[in-house]
Image (cartoon, rainbow, N blue to C red; front, side, top):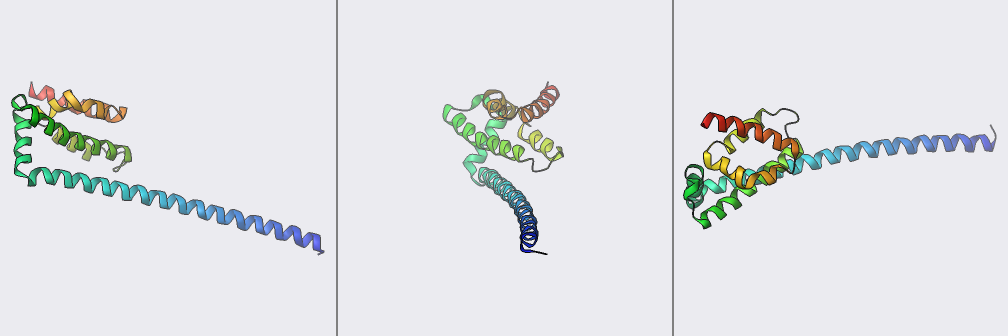
Length: 157
């Protein structure tokens, strides 16, 4: 084997090694991306749990939610604004979680969660008055929430 042939074989081996390294780095980037999405989903869910816990650990917030759920029409303008801000945060967290597809294609937990979010007349009223523009940001979420909303409204009638 002369020097030209040896150089050709060396270049081929270098090319194969470069492709192997590129493949390895690509797989590492995919793993890192999945880990990053999982970390974001966990942080989002933790924030949502903290948000809900704060509603019920503060007596005035808990009282406001109770009133909004059961006597929406009697909310003062200040109470309505406060309730809107509280529920807006919940809806935005729901939107983020939905987009992350935390549960994949399994919608059972989502159904249960949205049935709770829309359980009372005041909660459904929030969707009617303020929540739809948020869920409309994702057409699939809107369709899903509307189906649950219609079921609950027909049961209430």
